[in-house]
Length: 125
Image (cartoon, rainbow, N blue to C red):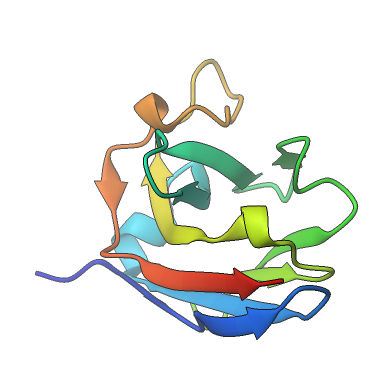
């Protein structure tokens, strides 16, 4: 049963933009926290941006000021608008959902228990 489906990845030149989408099944969409994560070549998976059910957001330092996470509740869809892309943003991007800890959403992937299959982003210099 597919619960999170990402799309929107692709290849762009440095400075370009992409918008990632993640369609989330209704039950999973009700999770306290949903967000975007990435795993670059030979790197560990890391948090990019997360959003709580009340709309509060958190961003990793590399994403701050360039990426925007948002959600469309009517469509049960999560988005990540990525601007001013850099080669170091090259990675597989995943969306994931989790219950949160003490009412807060954290960026570390270990707090998320339902994952999509990912969409690849390649940024060339």
